[in-house]
Structure formats: structure tokens, C-alpha cells
Length: 262
Ligand SMILES: C[S@@+](CC[C@H](N)C(=O)[O-])C[C@H]1O[C@@H](n2cnc3c(N)ncnc32)[C@H](O)[C@@H]1O
Image (cartoon, rainbow, N blue to C red; front, side, top):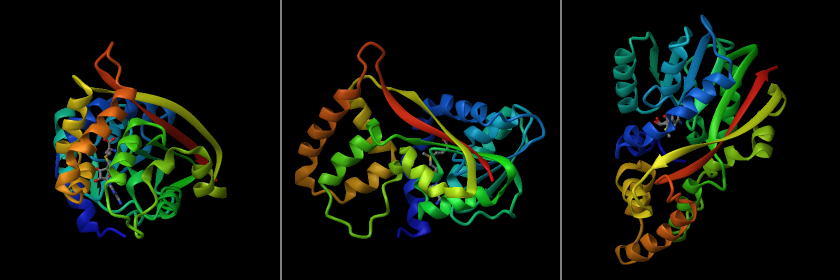
């Protein structure tokens, strides 16, 4: 299991806030799907730079954000100040949330808690801190979307790791979600959406992934130098399958899951 310091490092290097600008519509979709309204107590798990929490706060909710990475929380504080909304920000792990049982009316996570391990604990923690009858809702990249497709290519060039955690993208599979939430929830429903990552060409997308995404930056450090040109060619082939030349975007598919806490 990766240490907390390693996880913080992965999410501090690179420049997730720049990549994440193209994901803002997903945060709004999540807040809509959970029917967030005035005066509700909302938790944004793995809040990153605060996109979901700040969207919910602008609808009148009382919001709290929690993330394992201090650098993300600094950006979240700055974003809340710019948006002129109140929010409580906490450093913490999605598998050990620093909140009481039943503390929130709704607990949301936008491509966030999918990265926490072990995933069963991330699921039960989200349920634990939400009051009975409250909502949980989250988004995850689907297993067939471009991000796991790129990660799969990368894995072909990495030494086998028997201690690797379950791939985060399994959260995009409805059967897996059902299994992980079990009878802690009722009325589990799914929606599918896409965000469009802007990019001038497939090579530009790879350039931004390898220089701005902590996940790809750390993985590339373990690839033999001699393999980098072949890896790049293979990744570009994959991106090419998704790239939309008519809009200069790469659609990234996500699954939104929402349920009522039992
Ligand atoms: C892809 S970003 C998403 C951020 C944000 N939710 C958004 O919509 O932009 C993933 C976030 O998960 C956080 N994260 C990863 N593992 C975590 C864990 N175990 N507990 C809490 N946060 C975690 C990272 O620090 C990062 O901010």
C-alpha cells in the first residue's frame, strides 16, 4: 500500500489544477444529481481544488472539503476566496474521514475517492458520515475511457507490482459499486457523462499527461529510458482512437453513482 506521503507527492507534483479546468462541468453535474440545496451540510471528499464544494456553496449549502494533499487545499482556499463563499477545509484521508457519524446531508466525490485505498473503506466511510436518508454521490472514470486506456499502455512498460492496489477505474463499473456499497444504501442509480479535454493534437494530450499528471509522472520514472519512444508511440495510437478532430477535444467518459443512505 502506498504511504500517505507518497500519495501527497503524486498529487502535489505536476499541475492537476490546470488539467482539472476541463472537468468543471462534472462537478456541477454531481451537485445537480445530488439535488444540493440551501442550508444542506455537504461534504466534498478528495475535494482537490474545491470544485464540488464551491459549486455547492454557491447554491447556498454549508460545505466542507477534505483532501489528503495540502497543496490542493491551499488552492481550494484561494478558489473559495475568489468565489467569495464560506467553506471548511480539512486535511484527511477518504478511508479515515475526520468527521462524526451522520454529520452530513450529502457526501459527494468527483473523481476523488476513487483513488483512495482500500476502496471498500472509502465506500463505507462515505456512508458512515452521511445521515440516514441523506445522499451519497460520486463520479469515476469508466474503465473504457481514455484515462485507463492510457494507464494500461503505461502498465505494459512497468515491472509487475504484486502489491499494486485495485485499479481506481473499477469504481466506474456499476456492479463493482453495487458490491462495495452493499446494503449500506438504497436506490442506487447511475448516469454516464463525458468531459472534453481540450488538446491541439494527440501528442499535445500526451505532453500534458506526462508533464502535468502526477500519476503519469511517477509511473514514467519507472520505465526504462530505452522504452520511452515505443511507449510514446503506443500511447499516441490509443489517444488517436479517442481524439475528436472536429472539436480538438478528447472526450473522457465518467460514471456518476448516487444513492440514499439506508
Ligand atoms: C483527480 S483529483 C480530483 C479533485 C477534485 N475532486 C476535482 O473534482 O477536481 C483527485 C484528488 O484526490 C485526492 N486524493 C487522492 N487520494 C486520496 C485519499 N486517500 N484521501 C483523500 N484525498 C485523496 C488528491 O489529493 C486529489 O486532490
